[in-house]
Length: 129
Image (tube, rainbow, N blue to C red):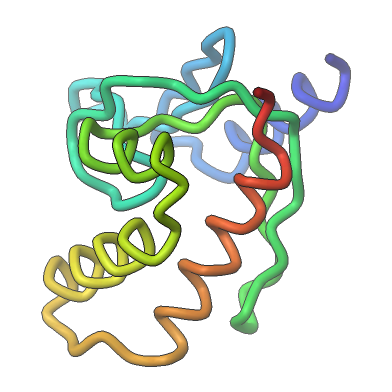
């Protein structure tokens, strides 16, 4: 628990113009001028409607930005939840890559695919079943 509290404090220090909302299974950062909405941690869509319990985990970065820490559960939209329950990691990755690329106005590429794949693998290792 202490690690989670330290992480939430660090998040607040890194994002002074945001509110850190600590839930039972996940922590969310919300800009002060926005309404808090759960998002899907797999594809980034709103709303995330389900939380898969998971252990805290470090997600190795594929970029120069450094590793990320995931604390607690992972939110999922209905479609990603379906893919996870079917253990269809290829469909889950394809959905996430395509939606991330579409939102950013870029073409899907290997770096984006590798980043999504790394994140999703971390989830499947940390998932509590």
